[in-house]
Image (cartoon, rainbow, N blue to C red; front, side):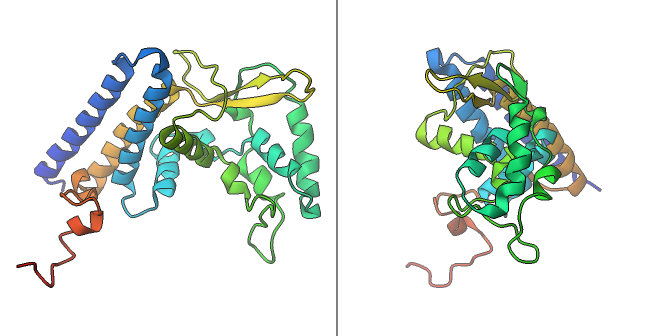
Length: 255
């Protein structure tokens, strides 16, 4: 049975994060508001993912959270433009069959947009065609040290977050409108280049919706597991978190 005190703390935790999302979506952030909102939404998603997966590496916790708790089914899809770009950069013959499959698929896209990312490849379509290194392990593209999982949207979104949060730059052109709620591609045809460039857009509205869904699904999970969300974090005065862990005892006290 759920402890009433734990229930109260879960409800408080969810309410606080809902207020954060509301504030981020409504505060005036000036002419570069889209960029700042995304950075703030990413910060909230990382905190929520830590509450759900406190022992996992940040990237793994984040990608698992946006797919599982935010209900992002397309997060497991493999980005076709990223796959083709990766295949263009390897001479490894083991990838020829996958190249013969992927290139015609991208040609079908033509140009224009927006194209929603549900047009991208199911992971099974790529996984079964990706060459193996020995009995089971996926062969990495040697020139890039890359395997197919890095091309899934769950990982691409984290890469996008890293560039935006740590370098304050969006790696792709942003065509988004305030009402946009779904990730999509928009085509660009550079002057003098006959090849269409597909730019991937993760709108701030999509991140806001992911936060709201994630909060509610995390709340349900915390209630079912009787977990206090605040105990998933090591609070304290030290910036090295393990120094705040009460289970790691002081053995040689400073006097």
